[in-house]
Amino acid sequence: MTFEQALKAFESLERQALIFQQISAVLNWDFETSISPKGTAARGEQLAWLEGASHDLLTKEENGEIFSVLKAQEGLDDGLKGRIRILNESYEKAHKVPKALAMELAQMVNDSTGVWFEARKNGDWTSFKPYLEKLISLATERAKCISPDLSVYDAMLDEYEKGFTAKRINSLFDTMVQGINDTLAIVEGKSVRDDFLHASYPIPDQQRFMKLVLSDMGFDFERGVIGQSAHPFTTTLGPDDVRITTRYTEPTVDAPLLSTIHEGGHAIYEMRASNPKTAGTVLASGASMAVHESQSRFWENIVARSYGFWEHYYPVFREIFPIQLKGIDLKTFVMAINRIVPNDIRCNADEVTYGLHIILRFKLEDQLFNSGLKVADLPEAWDELSLKLLGKKPDSISSGVLQDTHWASGLFGYFPSYALGNLLNSQIYARMKKEIGADEAIAQGKLIKLTDYLDKGLYQYGATYEGYDLFRRFMGTDVDASYFNSYLTSKFAELYK
Image 1 (cartoon, one colour):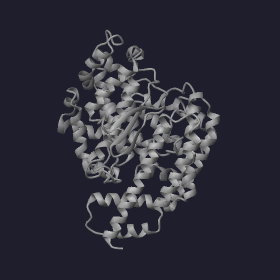
Image 2 (tube, rainbow, N blue to C red):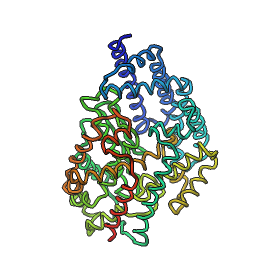
Image 3 (cartoon, one colour):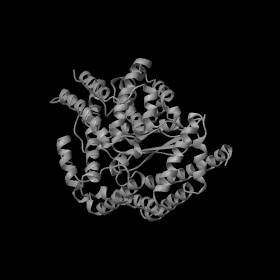
Image 4 (cartoon, one colour):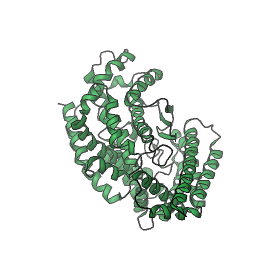
């Protein structure tokens, strides 16, 4: 097989693999947002079939020769090398994971997610427990197939953050905890008024404000939409079809607002990653989950919780909600959305204690896969660790071990990416302040200036480079948790002075 023949065959394989991914994304979007109560079983069969068909595509006999010829070719540009790397990894995993296991796991994720929805709503751990046990068993089997030389949990972590072991993450988290504790010491004993956030804010008016902010960030409503789901998420259904969801079931108005901005950060990254150089290829997506979460949490926390952001947007927000915010000045409002109060729900956690939620889940996953923690003992272990880290046990099992969809979706090893994203974005932010005057741009509502800067350093490359390779290329240095600690302590010292 010549290089030209191999490249043509590769491009056909890549296109078909992407179509399978996109069809799966469509089915999952529908499942999360609007499937009928009795539609779960059939949807599971559909997703399992797709997983089997995708497995068949990736394990075709001729694929081995295609990748052998392409990888031997010298002088390829970084884009093509990235495409080959990504699809070759999928090819190798497909060969390592039996088709029956891949299909069973896809079916189980669908079934368990449906059970989780009801279990969370009803506080019914007993109904979800056997599904989680089965998911853990299947995910463990898959991890052993893919990376037999790693521990099970390290193999799972490697799926999301290449080269990051539990030991390395523990070290970074230990440094991060010091910054969290230092910040908690700054705010200790100081109360913040936030009753006005609990008022009734009509959803259509919330949506109007959110659309304004997302537009200013660079969210293209010709290429994306906003829906509602039990758990907010972002998904890419095609190069010009990026979708986000939010929810309006929380008791305060800032929760859906910040959640929407968070998902908007993901979506803008996906939109900018799909550009004339990458569209229609496997490069048109984020480089890694930590890089992805660095962007969503940058927009949610560093931008949308900042004083400068509300200097610009609070007059508009107060004009939309004059009754709810009567007598509430800018300083009072900004203090309220930055209040530090331990919260059961991760998605609604304040910027400071959020990292403790991630550490809780990381430690429980480590215990589940490396230290013999039984699923039956998970609720009690969750409550005890929550008390230790956050100073309180959850008010209910629905706001404890049942609150997240990640385990029901088989996403073991994903959680650390959220906190790692905080470490990355604080480092990037320090550079943005020096190079483009980020704080001034935020205060002027020129959010697109931030997006364009991030586009040049990160977004435009999509998945051309692996996550931390991309970060080092952009920043010229490795991850340094001290930036996050400095950001937190300086921000809250200024707010509470």
